[in-house]
Length: 120
Image (cartoon, rainbow, N blue to C red):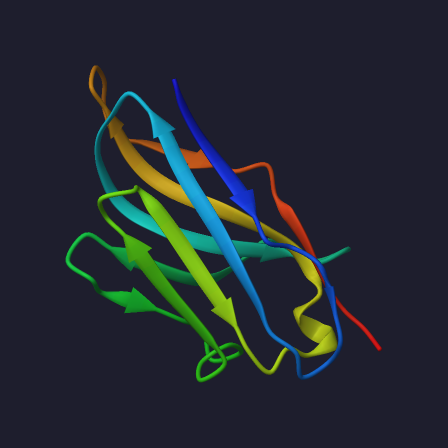
């Protein structure tokens, strides 16, 4: 059984910063991609950032230059440093990972979500 556990969501003022963390645990053989998605009320879930095994990183234009994803391969942990936060960044942030367990094919896993609220 694989689990993704997120932390770091909070209420922050516009222009502030937050750092999210997500740790994967369980019977993990390999992790191909780790990333972050977000979903605001009434909107579809969207990609915020992801990072592959070879270090390739992907950001949408809405967060480029403000958000930075990083990964600790030894700890199976991914981080999202969010700077210059805007009210439109308010959403539930979900960790996502494509993981191959010791027994089985690669499978997509999701964390439980952590709330980020940007408001004065």
